[in-house]
Image (cartoon, rainbow, N blue to C red):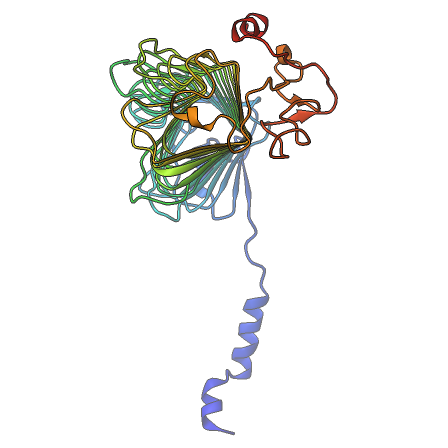
Length: 507
């Protein structure tokens, strides 16, 4: 036998022992029942091992062992047996209603199916996930957060890093903090299918959610309603629904908001629903009745882009601000707005110092296949183009029936480096259609000035009929002008003066 092989090969008894050890079953994950097998949640966590589940029976729990409970670093699941409707952790308006991880960052913790009520703390009234380790991960799902208050940040949840998933949760009944009335989040963030209602930030930023992260952030399928950041109108109270902080270091990737509803959110200064200091992609969202107070900008959203951002297939209805009733876009990045509908948005500035009923573009912007109708501003009832913009392109877009200013106007301070309209229909705007900085584009590049032929305008459908000059088979460029058309209706706006159209259709 080769002596080297002999040294490397185990003896027969040793090999048998190793095989026997390998065949022994590993310890299976355990379920620890509270209060059946362990009197409190805290006691159950203290004996849990990686992979275990702490299962809490139905009931309302308060006091030591059930609230302000420390997570010890295990990879565990903490779940209720009866779901959030039947399992309440109550801080009694005196202590944190749930859990905290500080000094013992949990590798991966899942919290599932609780109502957290009446939590009080300096940070994170229900959950404080204070582990900045990139390996930290928390998933909070199927939970309800009610009346949780932080004297600092994160009324219900504060997460300082790693990865935080908030899925199928509801935040309601006045969750409040200085920043992030419902949640203050850092690291990688995923919010899915959640509801944020009536949350409030008292100092500057994020009525419902404040995100301080250069990492990937996505918010999908969620509703933000009646959230506020308007305690101090003289301060920078911005982002009534969501506030994205400027990432450091800077990142080229955009945050993502998809399939969300923003309604009735208020900011004292900028971004009634959303304020962002990073590029953000918005897809298939609705913004309705959001506003800023006083001299604020961006009734629906105020975005300062760094890279390329897209706003696609979204609706902006009835939003208002001193300037930019719908969107305010600025920064060194560029924007594409495609397939969006802007209706009844208002810039309240009456002295000409601001404007942009639907859109204020202070950055390179492309608007494509959109409909802007019945928006109002003293300057640019549809679009106001800000100073120093490199290029603005508008194609296959309807801008109609605007009140106050012209369809498209440019800031008095300077003209954009490039401004081009193609295959657009500008019609019936009180301040004029092809005037101001687009006066030379009437009749050029397939642009028209004709009644768009909206289908059932009083019903706010805003698709054009098959007979419309904007329909694909009828438009000068052979493509649809505007956001949609329908073969099922024949009612269309007749050619008329703007005054008669306004009297007939404005509400």
